[in-house]
Length: 187
Image 1 (cartoon, one colour):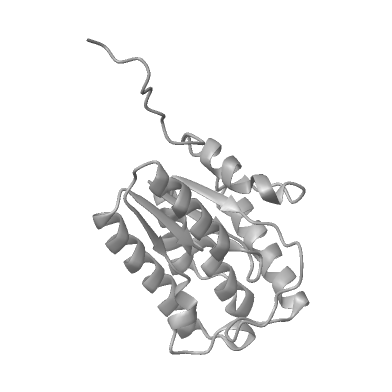
Image 2: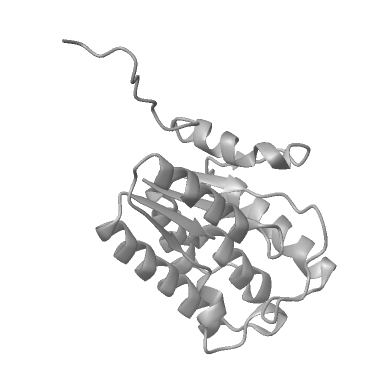
């Protein structure tokens, strides 16, 4: 099982990844989180990104997903190839070779959850803080979802406290660990 939270920067994907991982651990699943790879990119990101930087990010995302999926039964991704691709498209436009890669790879996710933009991004030392850039990327993600006809679960902006339960339900997972009935012992 591979689940990704997708969306623009500064929307809370990282927090959701850790919250979901905690819930999945309580279900006795071996869980790993693929953290946002852009933070490790040695090349420019955000508004100053380049084709090379975004190619590095896309390929690193795929490599980390492959490595985690080989070891863990549940992998939670802080981004997917789709929303990473939106940054490349924003900077240099769509590329046929990356369209094919993203279109093929997006099918490897069990579920994608789109996190809505609810507030401007805050400074974290890496990501851009421009509200306009945040909204442009969000629109670009929506355009790619439509272009590739990707099934996405959109998290309700009016129910932030219920997002993890919505993700569990959409992925067909129980909301709580199974309880052992200690009072009905069979002889």
